[in-house]
Length: 347
Ligand code: SAH
Picture 1 (tube, helix red, strand yellow):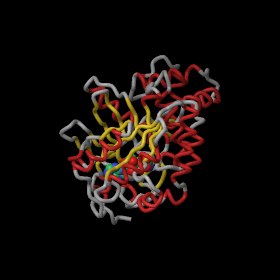
Picture 2: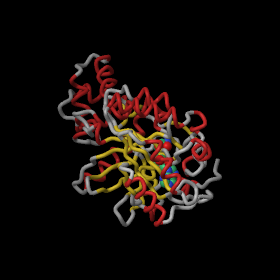
Picture 3: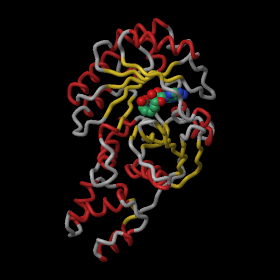
Picture 4: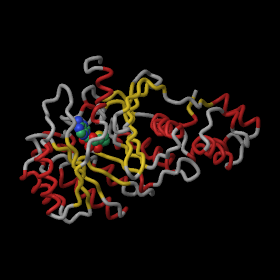
C-alpha cells in the first residue's frame, strides 16, 4: 500500500480532485498529518466518512521501523531505521543553543566515492523515496513532541548525495516547508552537496531560498581529485562559478564544509590556498575535525593544527567556525553507525 507521506501538497491536491473531492481536503489532510500528527485516518474528524474510508483502503500511515537508537552524552541522538526492504538508514538529532536540528539521509549508501567517507564503503543501494525522507523528520519530531521540544532546523547531510536524488529532494523540501504542515522555514534548511555543478545551477532557480553547503575539503584540484572522485568530473573552478551563480540568484550565503584530516589538508599552505580560492565570496567556512573511520587510513587533525588553521582564515577576514563534534561517542559522522551495524562485507 502506498504511504500517504509520499505526496507533496500539490500532488495530494490533484489526487483528491481526481477522486471527485474538493481541493481544500488536501489542506485538511496535511494539517492532520503534519500539524496534529495523528496516527490513524479515523482521527481526521473533519473529513467525510467516505473520504476516510477511501484513504484507509488506499494509503498507509506507517512510520519507519526503529532498528536502534543511540544517545550521546551531549544529547545527540542517532536513529537507525529499517526500511521495508530491510535496508538501514541513519538519521541524527542534534541539539544546539539555537534549537534542534535533524540530519536527514537521502540515499541508501552513496555512489560519490569520497575516499575518507564511511557512507561509500558499500556503494549505493538505492535512492530514498519521498516518504522515507519525510518520515525521518517526522520520527524525530514525534520524539521531540514527547519532551515538548520543537524541531527548528533540517540539514540534508546524512548518508547519500542529495543532488543524486534530485526530484525527491525538491519534493521533500516542499513538504517540510509547507506552511500548514511542518513549516520549517527555507532559511532553516541546508542541503549539502559534494559539488554536482549542473544541479547547483538548477537548484539556484528553485523558488525556496534554501541554504547550500559545499563539501570542499581541499583547496586545490590536485588534492581534491585525490579525496573526492567528483572533482575529476567537476573541477573547483566550475564548482566555484556555480556557487557564485547560486549566491547571485538566491542571495543566500554559501557554507563551505572543510574536514580537517591530519597531514592531508591541514597545513598552513592549505589554509592560504583556501583563502585564495574563496576570497571575495560571501561565504562561511565550517571547519570540522575528521571523524576517524575504521578501514580508512585517515587520522583526525591535532588540536593545535585545527586552531592554527582556524586563526589563519579568521585573520584573513573569512567567516569561520571550528565545529565541536557532535555525538563523537556514538559515531555520529556520516554513515558510521550504519556501517558498524551492517559490517563492510555483507554485499
Ligand atoms: N553527499 C553530501 C552530503 C552528505 S555527507 C556531501 O558530500 O556534502 C555530510 C558531510 O560529512 C560531508 O561534508 C562529508 O564530506 C562529511 N564527512 C564524511 N565523512 C566524514 C567523516 N568521517 N568525518 C567528518 N565528516 C565527514
